[in-house]
Amino acid sequence: MHRVECDILVIGAGGAGLRAAIAACDAGARVVVVSKSLLGKAHTVMAEGGIAASLGNVDGKDDWQAHFADTIIEGAYLSDWRMAEILAKEAAERVYELERYGALFDRTQDGRIMQRAFGGHTYRRLCHVGDKTGLELLRTLEDQVLHRDIEVMDETYVTKIFARNGRIQGAIGLQMKTGRFVAFEAKAIIIATGGCGRVYKVTSNSWESTADGIGLAYNIGAELMDMEMVQFHPTGMVYPPGAKGLLVTEGVRGEGGILLNSKGERFMERYAPERKELAARDIVARAIYKEIEEGRGTAHGGVYLDISHLGEAFIKHKLPSMYSQFRQFADVDITKEAMEVAPTVHYQMGGIRTDPETAATNIDGLFAAGEAAGGLHGGNRLGGNSLADILVFGKRAGEAASKHALASKLPEVSEAEALQETRRVSSYLGKSAKGPNPNALIEELRESMENGVGIIRDRSGLSKTLKEISELKSRQAQVRVPGTLVFNHGLLSALALENMLVACEAITRSALERRESRGAHWRSDFPRKSRRWHVNMVCFKGAHSMKLRTVRVRPMPQRLKRLIKHEVYR
Image (cartoon, rainbow, N blue to C red; front, side, top):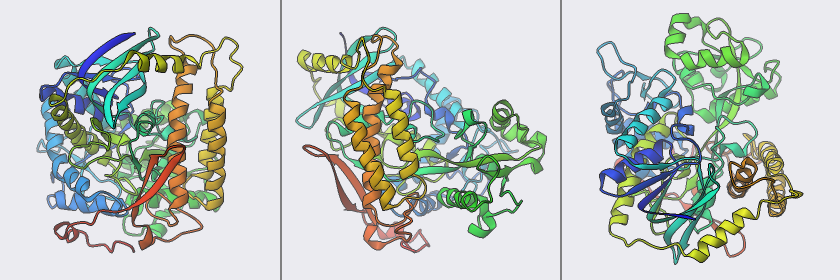
């Protein structure tokens, strides 16, 4: 077993992890970044539309106050107000910082960073690089990490975090290339592993999004919050089957794309007459769902998204990835034809419960940032706030973790603890491999989540899914896979399944408990919003099972209340 000592271990090499590593390194900490994927290949690259920040380059009236209000309203008043305030105030500087690092944004005619419209935003606020913003963000941060000579260990899967008496001790990971285990002794750990979209059958998420950070944190006593809030992006590809769920960026609608049903009706005029296609994501997703359910969908079970009226030159310049994506996968020329789209699981609003100022969890020395962390987005995420989130709170997590680490002594992962974990992981390997196939169990889990915890939910479906999750948990213990520790994808699936089951149970339990409809959570048996449920759901590990409690949403100070013109419970 190889041992690595560091001040801070960052688990995850997406935008949040890399920004945290940069901040921690600049503060004088020794940082090691661990990624189960290759450096530069994180789910951040799938974020296409832009970074939400109130630069005011296109709409001069935009400011942080408007961004704050939009975030709170879109979050269905479940967002932590302080996190929303921090994001709105600091996002602009993080964008300019990214520009100084070398990011190449699209430009206005006078040379400033261009901003586009997006659903739920009062003003044109999304700073973008065509429809490849996430890719450019990650490339830029990767360059900064490499120039700082921060150690990065990619293709290394962290299987366990060690904690003693509520304090971080370190972690253990498996190097896929060698089959060798690595024990990390770290003063602080930052979880930046992304979301859990792969627990659903139809999703825009890449293979990395298997709730790894959720499981790692929960198993040592960290609290989870708002897990029932899963965002269904209105527009994913529906055809061909191999591309089903692949994201069609909101930038298409932001640039002027319109939604049509099979009768040629622009149906969003009925559901959201003012904002139409640029209404909140939950509103657009449910509208599309209803059109399909009522028989006004396309032959492949979607609706049409048409941007051809804007012309070939404009589309190829503004939306090059979308043009290539539909050409390559569906043989559709979006400069001449409409796209077929339907809702797809896109984002996890909930996550590990953190402190707004420092991104610290309830476990001493454990921090979380990005999609793995909850609190900011509440009931529904505002488009473009994800990339702003990873920059703002990635930086804060890195700074706070370094302050903690530099004032702490290096803990020790005992030989006995490390050996016990390596034996547990290795126990999945079996010569006969007669146990359940982990990939088969994952497909059963995804099917169950799709059917019972989808866009529209009810008590019957949620209860059935919870029972199926319990059955899968008992079968998961018997999983066996053939092969060795070296690049064993079956073994990785078995390990991922552990974390996916934690996330699915938290999502389903929270959804069953929340007896109202709010944000992305829609109960057909409780179709209205209720004052009683103006609460955050908090899941935590009990002695023998997952526990759940409700916590009143923190009251907002009057200075911020006055910025919001809407009625909270309407």
